[in-house]
Amino acid sequence: MQPPPIPHGVAVVSAPAVVDTVLLAVAVMATSTSAPLIAATAAPTLAIAFWRNAFAGGLLVPWALGRRWDELRRLDRREWRLSITSGALLAAHFGTWIPSLALTSVASSTALVSTQAVWAAIFARAAGHRVPRGVWIGASVAVVGAALVAGVDVSVSTRALAGDLLALAGAAMAAGYVTVGGAVRSGAEREGTVREKVSTVSYTAICYSICAVVLLVVDLASGQRLVGWDAATWLKLLALTAGAQLLGHSLVNVALRSASATVVSLVMLLEVPGAAIIAALWLHQVPGWAAVPGLALLLGGAALVLRAR
Image (cartoon, rainbow, N blue to C red; front, side):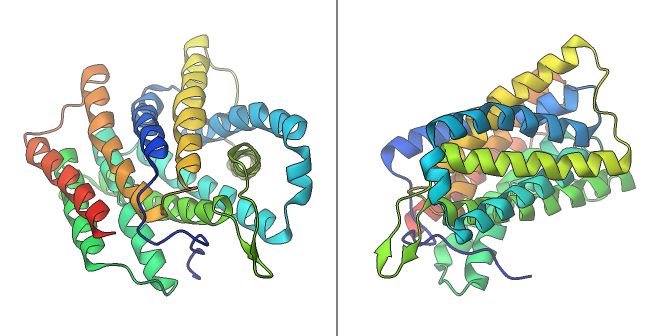
């Protein structure tokens, strides 16, 4: 598979600007609610994936058409192709990771999907970019920490192992989504000049809409139930859309204007302890004692990657 393109003008390892660092912190808090909400929602996993993107697209598309019509008309073939590819990768991410939450614990699934940082570095290296040794060391330490936080046990049931594999596949797809999104958001060189960056509104409107369409096709083809739930289920879907999707994912896409996909993926590792705490308090899924040293390794690994730039 051809590796996703690396953003023009953004180093493989570049830390975000101060304002984008704050936005990433908010994104981490928002996305930390995703896995616990999905695990607590009484709806088919792929239907959950569809509705969170359909609701988000339903809000963003009219906004983009009304406020960003001129920009949408100016998008060239490359920007449309990358935006559509990003939406398809996001659908693949949700289509693998969300079902994993029905098979394994919230903590294990979140920890394994957080290995997207390593995949992002692999994609960067495969694309011909030099990835500093400190990035590999930091990413490895952080992922080991994430695994300890989750208390991942490879000797669990076949069902849990299937969930773990789906979460790992979701991690690879998430890394591709963030990397391609970075290529769209950072602007592109054209005939010796640099085009203006594609706005977050335009990009996310396209990306979430494509994601919703792909997931709708999959849901219909597999016979997934898409309606007929109680009010509590719909409220959880709306909360998932407002928090993890519109606030979390969208702010990550904003941060890609100044930060590399590798660093953004590492920062999002902090979602692991956040989701584990929420799952412990709300769903009574309490991680083991290994979570304490694991958290220290996770934070230390993220720090190593930021220093490696």
